[in-house]
Length: 75
Image (tube, rainbow, N blue to C red; front, side):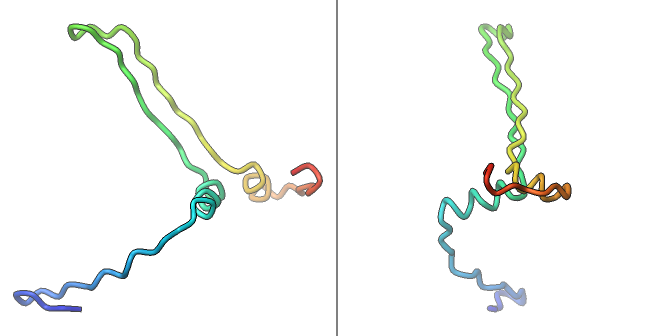
């Protein structure tokens, strides 16, 4: 920690590298919600509006959380 004008500032840890597969595994294990809106308009008149709501989660993690037995031959 360092002090600057009487205020203590914590040193930031060095950035760590995470493999893409590890990040994807963490996201799918916990699940992620993707939400977005796209609007096509001309002269402030909305012509098309698209709303996206998606839940991405691993089926294996979801079934295990519910207490279902997972058949390894199917996965």
